[in-house]
Image (cartoon, rainbow, N blue to C red; front, side, top):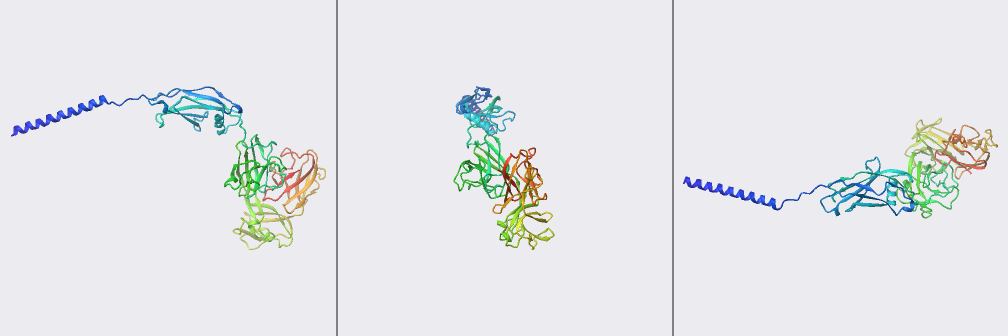
Length: 480
C-alpha cells in the first residue's frame, strides 16, 4: 500500500512538471509571434526664415512678408497629425509673453504683414520703430506629448501705422466741454485747463477737473460746435471709466460722454487709432456741502466747498441772495448725517445745533477746516484784473462783472507783448489768484498769468477774460 502511494505521488509530480513546461513554452511562443513594436524618439526641429528683417509699408498689409520653415522632427506617427506651435516674442523675455500660432501637419507657415503688425502693436510697440524679436517652433504629438523646441531666430521687425478707427482732429488739437468740466457748457472753453496734450498723431491725453455726475464732449476746435467726438450710447454700464467713441457719434440725447460719479481730477486718454477712451482718477476731491436758508435747507442740492488735497481744508465761493436769513450749515455729504454748527468766534461744532451765518446778502468766499474745526467768510465786493498792462501797471484793478446765474466774472484788458496779470478780490492782495504749474488751475498767491518762464505768454491785443469760480475748490480762467 505504501508503495502504491509513492507511485501516485511521483505521477502527480511528473504531471505538474509537464504542465509547467508546456505553459512556459506557450508564453515564449507568444512573445516570438506578437512582440510589441519599438518606436524611435523624435528630434528637435531646425527653424529657418525667409527674411532677417520685416519692415512693411501700410500698402503691404495683405501681402506675405515672412515664411518660417522647419525640419521634420521625425516622430514615428503619421506626420499629418504632428502639431507645431510658432512663438514670437520680444528678444530677452524668454518667450514669457509670446504670441503663439498653431499649425498641424505642415513644415512651414507664412505671415501676412497685417498679422505681424498686430503682434507688434499688441505688445504696445511704437510705430515705425525697429524691435528685435525672437522666434521659435515647438513640435509635439497632437496630445502635446513629446515636445521638442527648435533653435531661436532673431528677426528685426517694425510696425507700420494703420488707418485709425476714428479720424483724429485735423486741427491737431482737442478740447473738453460740458457740465462735468470747470467751464460748463460754455464754448470756447478755458485753456489750458480744458485742452488735451497731443502725444502723437493718434493719441491725446489730459488731466482735468470733473464735477461728479456731469457729462462732456470732446471738440476738435475750441469755440465751434460743428464737429464733436462723442459716444453712441451713454447708458452703457461702466462707460464713465472708458470705452468706444467716435466722430459725431450717437444721438443728441445719448451722445455725451458720461462723467464719473465723484468730483475730482481725472486723466482722460483719447486713442483714435483704436477708437477707445479711458478715464482714470488721479485725485478725488473732498467736498463739504453748504445747505441753508438761501436754497431751502436741502443738502442734496446745496453748493459745495472743495478740498483739492482732500485734507480737511475746504473753500469755495457762494452767493447769498437778499430776502433770507443768511443762515447755513456745513455737511460732509448730501444729507444731514454729519453736520457742523456754529461754535462762535470762527469755530465749528460737529453736530452743533446753532446755524452759521453771514452778515447779509452778497457774494462770499467761505473756508472751513474740519480738522481744526474753524471757518471763515469774506464778503467779495469786487473781482479785478491787475497786472503789467497799461491800464493797471500793478497799481490799480480793472473791475470785472459778476454773473449770478453761472458764478462767473468777466472783464476786458488790452495787453502788450510780455504783459502779465492776476485776479484780485476787493482791490486787495489778501485774496489773489494766479497760475499753478501752467495747468490753468488758479490758486491763491499763484504765479503771474503770462509769465512765459512758468506757464505761457499772453498774446498782445484786447482780451475778454473770464474767471470761473463755479466749481468746488477748483478755479480757472479763459482768455479770448
